[in-house]
Length: 576
Image (cartoon, rainbow, N blue to C red; front, side, top):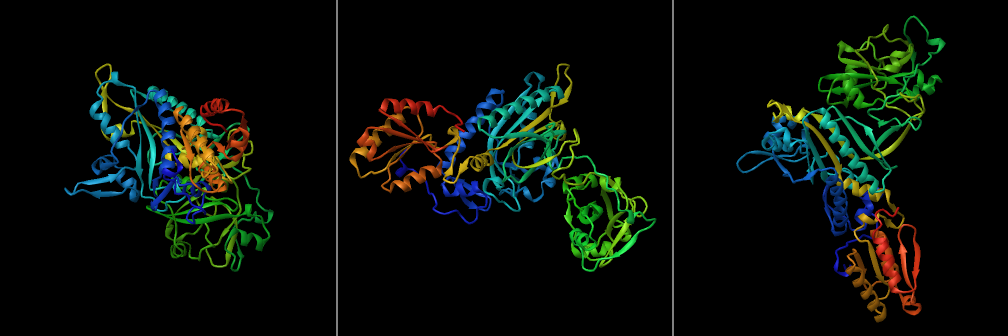
């Protein structure tokens, strides 16, 4: 492909709306453009890389016997009502009506459609196991789309669904798909790990996320390098500390402390000259079922997902100032777990609070805190559970080793759905005895667009994008440094045509621009290897290949040697 005839609208400066390095590069290098908030156009460069990524995924799906199909992006709302998930998805499910006033939605996922399809077309155990997959669009009406393809409204995913006779069959299908994922992400060159995760809105009995380590990742993984324990921060557990109380706090009843204008644990601790670990802080939340008073140690943070699970609620929001004052009788910053008005809040305390005694808490009174607060004596918690976020240095629940926290990006999620959707949608088959049974299902997703951006996040440098060879939009670039020189132009044209005839994806930079601009542009868009043709090439009869990964130059004495090396380089998959 000739650069002058291709569509590469690159930018000179980083776009203001982009925060992540990868988002900036996708826009600067001309891989994509934003059409609307969270909705993007894949430009030719980005589309070429996307298709190469999809091909790697297809190869590994085929290797485990998965069969590709394509399901509609527009789905009947009746299917979602039948499963009950039309309410669960809330406003992320974009609903609309056609001219016959029938309800439809843009697909945020495909469990309902695939289950309905198999229900109507698979009747016997002889047709099982079966795994169907697609690489297709999804749409979720995100409240705050951000970071480019990392959290977009419209996005491309690979969805696979397995159908088995029983749990034993599901376990086999699940492990096959997990192995396929491992092959895909090894081929992509990622440092990744599967971790146990919440099933979330998809549901099911068990799920794991495939997480790629990156300092820019939104997700956090808790890891014990001693025993290999690894789990999302929302699922992580650690050995519960026991706090030895201050001697002065071992009193038979609560003692009020005057703390004028001191609201936060940090402020009160500094004022009283006490460590934050002696405090139990109370935070008031609002839910669909009423209010919750969550209580954790002063140096801890409440993990809201854990709190929701412990309290049995779906929605959790910080209470408004007026609501806090009504429940506690005091302004924000002085809440305590005892004496809440009219029993108006469910009191959920972390197990560390229950393990120890004589805490310092808010006094539910302006400018006051309370010492010697003892669970079970001064207040009775409604729920005791692990509701704290794990911190660096906490002890591993399995081996007591020190826990670490790493930033990561979720690129895949696999689920054991069991009979969840087959029961809801009445999807059955006949077993070998002629009895009807519900399909046992698994679900397996990869965020394809998100994976492409993560590749750029991980594999880029100060010069631009540096994708693995198998995913770069072009494998090789031929750069004519001076198109005004007839010899340079003719030699460049000849090399370009010969490499193209080898079946190699090559970009010929035939633009009449300065050598510096051309070389920088090739590095920006991330071509792994470039053949540079200039005055020295003509004069010395030496042929130069520059390797993008380390800017290493390779010199060849003749074109035959050059072409032989080009063939070798084109067969490298990762080149990392």
